Length: 111
Image (cartoon, rainbow, N blue to C red; front, top):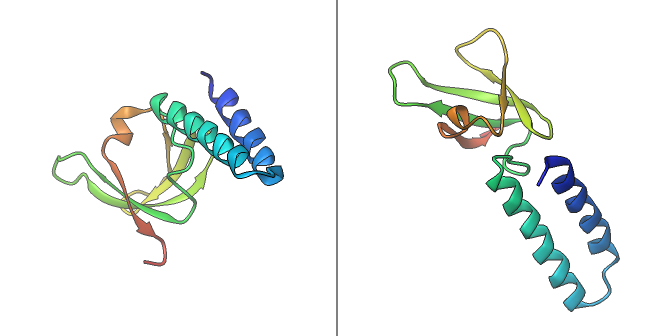
């Protein structure tokens, strides 16, 4: 399933959810939304996990590779991060497993 299809499906279901009139219809819509979220995660996309301002940590186990960063922006398939030990920003695609498997969300910027 392509990312555009997943995102369009979620957006259409959000509209339907706002107009839902019965608990049964609401449960059906929520079930379908969960299906799309799981499909996105299975494809390597992480639509809902990161938001601008979140603090993340990259740690791949190598010395000097345990660093914090702030998520500056989140797009449909990537996030832009400013790590504290780098002058340039890093663009990290959600389907880049070499990056994503070593990233943990450590909290909001204000924490």
